Length: 532
Image (cartoon, rainbow, N blue to C red):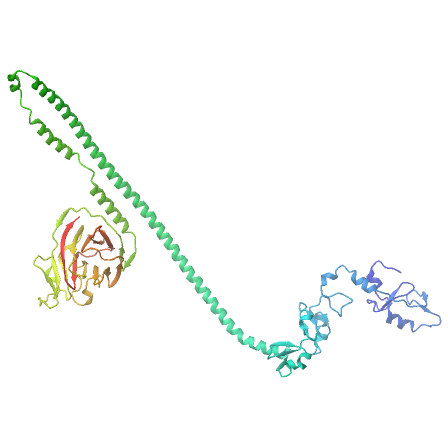
């Protein structure tokens, strides 16, 4: 009797389980060989056999060949299980471990059976059995040679190659290695934490650098935008000055040309009159006409005067406007800085137009006892011997002196001839500067600024004991100092050809300023001084 469901054909109608060693009776019913055997043992053999279910008689017990194999191979869901559990062959169940001792896979509910025996060794299903066998003897690897650091089988252990070597079981060798690894693990964790801290530190450093870069980018962008605006304004101002001068000169020249044309017409008439007189034969007529011989000289003088009054383009004034404007713009570019003071290097400059000469003299009462002041109060020279000058609160203990005049407003300029010395300091000081101790030296305090040449062939600017070298060598023998008190600027020039604008110091002045000069060999001299 056939059934629509193949699983029903494999079910034993006696024990109601999947048939073990299945047989098919003549009537078509299926059952286990053991089950039907127990039942048929109770029947009389002489009378043959009968199906316990339908009572049909038969003489043989044919087996159900390949039915289970065909059934299992025909199941559509077998591939879904992958590697199946060997004991569960009646129902495919995914295996989770492989027992090397039994060469089979085992699921969770059969692990207990295998784990009861110590010779059962489990491994992951992904581990190939061939990888756990000795490549020489094809036996399972069960030992570990500590000398050769390799896993070996029993035959390897008995070979001469490993006979005298120290050999451990895989379990013991594994535990030893695990112990070492556990000891290494804290060190690795510490290293990892250190790496994380270093990474965090680098990331923090990078964030700071990026922040600084962003700030500098914004600052430079604003600076150049402001410089562009100021340059545009200066360009418009200078071009307007030029066009204004051109217009004024054009008017003067046009007026002069008009006057000259009028004079030219007068000269033409006079020339015609003279020719007529020259052609006259009557002497009385010639002598009675007025004398015009001096008219040409008179007209030439008036012509020269008109030509002079016509004027010219004031190039010096244009250069002054341009230079002052550029200097004002450059004063906004911070290159070096003291505390509250900014220093700007500029590499060249034109002569400035001055409005009047002034007389800058030295205050003898402030001169140090090793400083000799000439009678003109403009020349100072170093004395190797003490001059025994009267001790006064105003006198410096070192070889330097202040000017008599002070400046609290306006723009001023003076020159110093330094040909006679290669160790000097010139600059500006507040009158409240100390007169004793190292802090009284020009540049070594917050109340003075100076340019120094100390023996070598280069300059430095000093303020608050901080020194900033100026690039370039010494070329000239005269130094010019420009003071713009209102703008808070002190500029130093080297008067060579061309004039070299060394440096500009920008700060906020809080007291009147005196010129300060010091010399430590030879002599230096104040020359021109003027107000701009």
